Length: 191
Image (tube, rainbow, N blue to C red; front, side, top):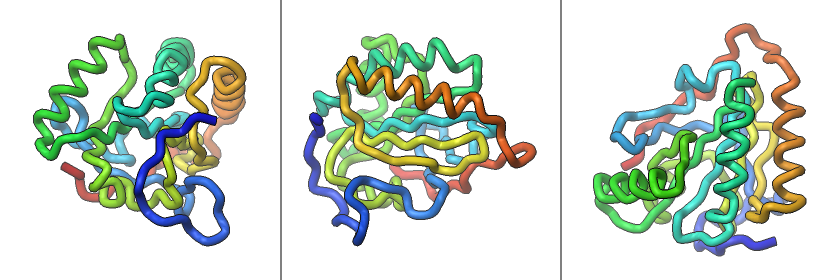
């Protein structure tokens, strides 16, 4: 498995990979136009949300993009929302977002991309994620807004891509168990 190494929060006891504390992923981040998008955003309500935490500097992260574009195009009408949270270099939020806008346009990315900040702000931007050792990180959220799995991505187009699609199709087949399932509550927006 190819994973870009990071120097981020220390591992939590008893867990070997990245995980979300509790059953909800809370965030409040800016989209590429500077608007705040929280985990409680209406467009996530009752949907299967696949969160890809990545950086444009991360080779395995880049190799996932064609698969994510395919999944977004194929399943967004069935209730899949792909959200990419980018952690980039540079302390100026406007410059980061301008770069990310250029990057998404250059790569034909139509799914939602959020500015997570820098690696130094990771814990503040996504306070519920523990045991991060590298990118990409994938978070699977069901139609009720509950995190069902968190793992490092594999970044290839072979078996990983087929398994990811099968898993998301399985999640899409399950209806929400809570009427008008709420998404996780947001936190303060990260710069």
